[in-house]
Length: 400
Length: 136
Image (cartoon, rainbow over all chains, first blue to last red; front, side, top):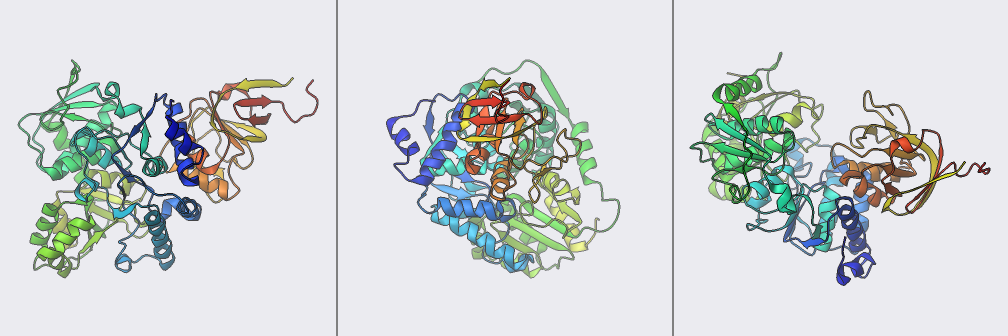
């Protein structure tokens, strides 16, 4: 890979040890993927925030980097293992809380904002079309590529961090036109109704496309922000590419030749997916209801508040969101309405990254992505329902 | 007889150890126990093997990118491999070996050697049968 004189100086340590290490990572990736050069990035989103994944060794590494490392472009974090301001409400061990705080402080010293969210585009880290990014969180990467028309590979946490400390990413993969061509085409002859349905659509396309970039045609559909967020979360989770072209939405959808063969997703297929994922668990009542995977929008928070007003929840209920949306919800009185019901409006975290394994048995959620991680990694039974049905379960304490 | 192979440096360094060869990719996050450094993925050709101090020879890494952090954690606990040789390196192993400062060379195939062979890694050079002191 070609390096400019300035880039080579960073590699040789002129900008400090942390920047040199970061440049070493980017050069190795550039060589692995035959990138001709480094591209400047306009923003970074760093995963690898939960102390559960970093451990003491990862924390020590971050603290070493923070001695002389500083982000040179705007950068935000993925969700952490807890709500940073009120972790006590999540019932976590004191040692976890202390060590998670140290992780956040180390990132802070590195100049990376503790806007811990999987929806950076709703939290002050909003790219323009055509921007080059180094983002990590798969749903955000997919949203940036497919809805916003920016360009990013799905970075690992350390490689995104390396981009934050240097301002560069190697020119390969989804930064190049060639990798952005659609290779498989789907026509959806069904009517996905809301965020849950669009998540299921993402699941079906992800499972059927084997990592190839899909072109999606959904006749007559005008998916809202919540639906697009759900589609972007589910598609890569279930094996799909972190870029799709949705006709009428993706800025560059018509820029590349369309594959000739068309796979059809009809109403029967979508209904089958609905029924299969809505199955109640073999035994027992749900003990956790979660919304906000990816982090809830203001509209989702408002709808939840309207439904919970005047009710009490009978099971632990979490609505996860980003701190800026929470600030709006506070201002509008929505937080108070939600929390008067006994539900929690949590920030900076989510049920996928919080250390919940073993604490809950049976989750009800509206997120196809959340379903995948809770049932695999989290070893929970999961029932997938519309958001309003999820909250109905929360109030009743059982499936209707 | 000693043999020499030339690969491409991913993370430069010098290390030696006995080869631990797998024809299957390995997942460092989930597939290796961080408390023991033992391969725990069910049905993996290396299931039950310890990585510590050995020269791990794999086609590539697989699984979550959190695997890069796992390579760092293994190394700092003294449970990491002495070096990693890959047929086709990818993000997880490339980033992990740089974080952990473990020598890593790309372009070396699992078929190039057998488990138990003595290996010296020095920059791009992989010397087999090294350290046996005879060279016959």
